[in-house]
View (cartoon, helix red, strand yellow):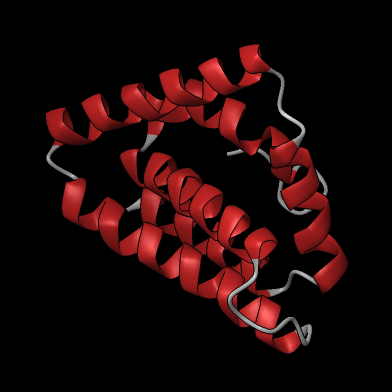
Length: 125
């Protein structure tokens, strides 16, 4: 399953994040303009529709959970004590990206929107 490989590569990149990477992604997410936030929600809705249509919601939930845990693990290795607002923001965003990657090629255009904040860490899907 190519979607699994893509999602696993994303999670592997998350695990390799440094503390600086976490803070940089968090700042990027926090600095969104209102139009960016609308695009984010539209992408999330589109991913939900694809997941329901393709019946991949369980796989997507598993991928999202793995992504969130990978961010938390990276934070731990970076010495960032939890809970931390930046880590929470990044973990939630990573979970949404992982859901989109699990949706596969039908969601690829909208996943690109979500990946904009991760440009220094991962390559596009």
